[in-house]
Image 1: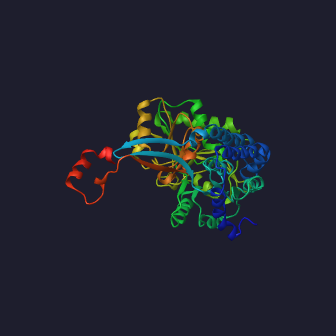
Image 2: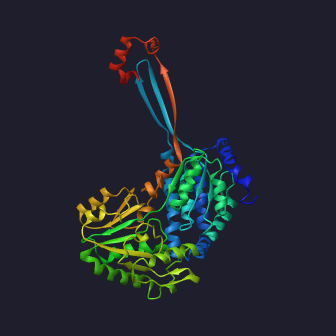
Image 3: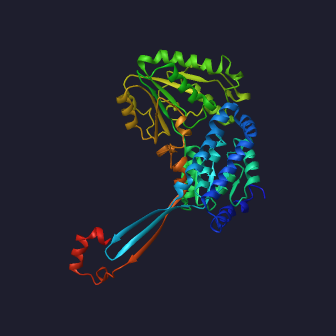
Length: 465
């Protein structure tokens, strides 16, 4: 049956629910076996995934291994190690007047989960939420981005060969296919992508009262105060910004540098870029490409919003944009509001951190916030000002690869979180078995009510209820 067959897509959620709730084995071991199948797929097809990601994004093999495959393998290992503990029922008893309460709480799978992934990390963002969903006992449908066709097709081939569609399946297609899926009766939708598309997904899901987890982008601020400068710090920022040619949702979007270190910061940025990618970065084997022509044009347009300090060259036929640093941004420019999501780094001087934080240049609800500093007071000011679920001090990107750290947004950067135990909880809900064992029949709680019983209720409320 073709992926984009309307009847096939519409019936997938019900078929997966039937498979889940008719299954005689919902054990932890069964879930772990499925996760280990995913691990085997990643290991056995590592070379094929490297080639697919190079085809889609010009991704260097080292970046594919480090930012996609290794992150997924570590997540699977971590989840398998802790899954039995997370799945264990929580039991409690409470003595009340006339009865004893017995409560058993367990995490229960939602049912059939739709995962719509993005093109910038097309392997990781397809399988990372699937790991949490499978760990919680769900069945899944993965819709990869059509803008990373080689990776999406490979995912469809290898996963659909190993798993039956009633348990886990990959459906490829365009926006029309995604719309058909989001209008289907899934039990939860997980979406990674742009704010605009995320809003559309949320509206469509809302019409069916389907819960949604949205992982969106944002203008992640990066501040380097007067104590934060070092060659190592600059290298961290430059690596995080230009990883995957800047197409990373948690990349430092804009760098704000204290005026006292502004000039030497710019010089060190140029030195680091030359050291990383050479004088001809288009020939570097370690630098990627822009995903598609439309996004290429959007990023190129942003280069003209300021003065080019470093880089600025591009090749449309190769979808190559040189690592670029811009300064002296034009007031009111769209670059202050739009997520860049490409290899263009604005560097903006500031004189006072309080003034900077109170300006409209800092998106408080960005996906993450970065600060490089040795001044604990300024770090505290920044962390208290930001609403972002994650603040990273003197480091970029790495927190997203740590299964101990929940990954998710707030406000304009989305809602809901996953990774590690947070992912297990995100794809399941609390199901409670409540039992009461009566040892006295308390007639006074039934009508007709009396003033005497009202007084007893107020006096003994904690024991009675």
